Image (cartoon, rainbow, N blue to C red; front, side, top):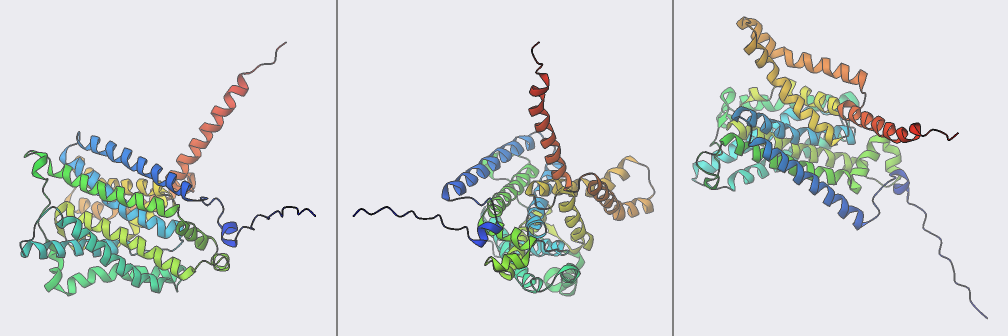
Length: 381
């Protein structure tokens, strides 16, 4: 009697696999993704470093500001674009990171603790403190939806600057805090631009943030974020802990905002409530919408727009002969008005944001290239 081999039927895909198609199959896919992201980060970092060597000091500071805002917009994109939670309080989270860096640097300086490691340590403390604040806000946000969630985060945006003016003994009120400025290492030479060194530090923080978030987005957790955004009921049926995923998204986004705020404070070695007004949170939200929700490349567009539009009133008042009153009104309102106008135009012309428009143009060009050889052929007669 011969026995026939029993065929083993392939296992049915799990509900999570059906809900989240296109997931990497195993370690090989994860490794290739990590290597690809590392290669892109190294190429982008090398390119920016080469560019900063040719820029003036003020332009290097602009590059540093773009990198600081990129840390924030990238984390904000993960929260709003990938997880669907609306936040109007990321300006306050930036302020939390900035004040943490200032207080840490002041404490270390008073105790004569100096060294190259003090700034990375201060930034790590800022990330930890802001992540803890994001955990507290995220626990409340996980129970709220829509305008209620926006209202809670808006309250946070008004609360943090108010705390700095109430506890003047710690935060020095409207005057803010000063701490030792970062100077280039002696190995770079006595005439090395301090602004270029600041741009390199900010670039390192931005590249690290983008690298970690790019891998996070392609991981199982990133797929869970998108599943919760698309349909909470289906995600819960697939075994995804919806509330925990939303809280973790807030923690990750807050940590990125704290890092960006700390780097932003480092650029001027000062921090004050006036640097983090309420409209900064609105700018951050509009920036990621204009750049392209759900896309880390869109976060880059948003960071560039934030710096360019914030400098626009100063450029206009510098090149136009305006009265002092008109110049002050422009400085307070022009950036917000231009941001709103750009938002309307982009949403009408490219609903997917600037990055969505770039993708659409690229897709059309690829289709045109594919069709061109077919149109050149003529039938033989």
